[in-house]
Image 1 (cartoon, one colour):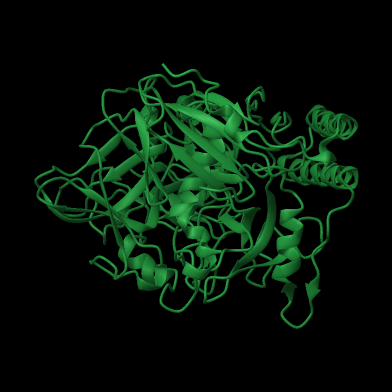
Image 2 (cartoon, one colour):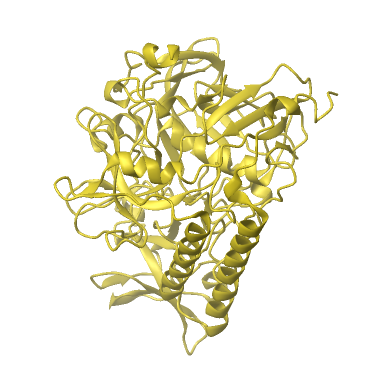
Length: 585
């Protein structure tokens, strides 16, 4: 095996003078103040929404103090005409949070899950995920700068793909929830420059990364705009996509995910890719989660840290028939299976006159014809020991003992009260979403990635990446799409290592399991099948230990939609490649 410090001298950089010991100590103290503040919140029993606001205000205070310790970075300038911040000053603001260092992670090519941090990452401990009232402890975040710096903003993309920001947390214009003016919430970051060395060590892939351009390094391809220029900063949708009253896809908190009608093909119209700068979840959005967790936590095993909503498949019948109510009464035993704040659907489950069962498929209309995607407000124990699940519903409804109550993917925003990475109450229960790098994920639904499909002519399915969502086509390969030559693993395979397919990080190899290799499973059509398939990731309510960022379902046709498919409103779907003139320079 190659010595883990070999080649390291090639990646040594000078320490940033702003990161002196005195400043570093002060920033650590600021982080400690946030932790203590949130402990107070938990001890006082403040309700979750207020706790979320308190937590965010404490974090904003910490960032302000960190900003002052760094010497007050340049502040963005508001453009009154365009009603947004100028991109020049937004870029300067983001760049002021760079540290210019080269970090690294050695990713095993084998069953081994533990990675080795090198370069500037060496010696930095892995974060400890948090829950509501117990903040995540993230050593990478304490400095307030570097490649893992991120910040919540409201923004989007213009038709040419150029990003914009029209709200920054704490500026009075920012809102996590729908503000009535079409806001969308994203995680702001600097462009990350990467270098993969997969041939210098037989046992490890050496992955170097920096927030500043270095010779031989490349960003994720979606960092390039269609005109060949570099994005001033990167935006990742914070939430799964919902839909507003006008029928527009949104990235906001406090809304049900848009499911049942979303597919690769329908997403072209839903995201208006032909006329806007948006798409569904992009290759970069998918890349960002994998980058954020593997480089900070130093493991390939995502479910060692977060199980997300991967084991919350509950379907029961009510025990009481009622009329004109906003509750569903179930047995005490069944009530314990449901979480307050989670999402359910109720259907008459009526077989009609045919006598044939409608089954339990959540796609069947009679399994959600009473209400669909509504939240449980609270549990109320009745005198006879049964429990009423109180439902957040505008209109009262009827229930029956032959009806079917089913868990569904969670609404967006359930992790808002979690400070940093983590889940609301348990990171390992398998019942609730998680947040990683500022992005909420694993809602209990597959996440559809636009700009990616698998194609087979009878010899296995190969990844195709389309850099520019403007060209996306229904039922066909987009003009300008790149055939990566990288084959998706076969059905039921647990991959062990990673490969870069034009910005899309995917699993390769076989022989892993839930505790070795990449620890996520992949499902696919038979290698001899032909055609195009959409790219689904993460896992749904019942995927258990196989779910996670590396999980892929590759057997669905491009027009397949389901209750179990969601996506995101991406601002990085319109990509390109570096302009020749810039590359030459």
